[in-house]
Figure: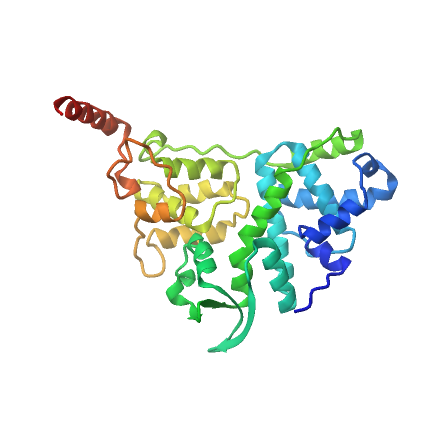
Length: 350
């Protein structure tokens, strides 16, 4: 497998360790960014952040200055102190990477995925029913990631498996790991310490803050009240209200629960508007499908507590989650009081 990366490659994938070394070798200081020599880099960095702030499709245009502009854009995002913008930025950059990787040579895709996830990805060069299965990954690693997607397409029984590996098309491999690339970028930005910025940069940061929509607060007017929702749903809704990127299973889980407690399709779609990669047409189709209004016309059931636990989304209440098998069995505020009373009564007799 080829391994040499040029500056243009590092500009496309600036979160790679080699790109970090390149930035450090330049000894770029915050004070220097306000100088004319760095105007183009600062302008490009601002553009990157604004794409995320305004929810625009990320540009695929790349040149060598993007190695530095990425580092500067992280500084600008962190300086805003807006966590929801940081999430948007990480996802926007991951989507940019997804688009660029789709046009790469197989060895480069291997290199980027391995550098982002530490997973051993191999070329497969297999074709089945006209589908080019270019890559393979260990079954164990596939199972760690695929459950985050609600579509049946990602279920292991719908994959080609042989010799302990799952065989994947190029788009599926890239999509499978996009979220981890987003997490890598988010963690990088989160760890950055922001020094005192020159006035010129402070002005840009203020412009970014003004251009970034404030996360909508979720309001519930029908069906169960928010205080009656189980902790797992409350946690997901709070994450969504902060514009954090929620895995596909989390979105599917929320939609099934909310629809089953009386929310309409329109209300559920409206709630999803806070997620960074929101697409109303796609979201509406998915929610209508879950509600049984499309496809096989079967309304999806709320995942069981066991399934929620397997996806790492359980935030169990020590009392009210006791002995329930479904989030729908989580007691309302009124029934919780009765439950406490019965427990005390039982304890008194023992």
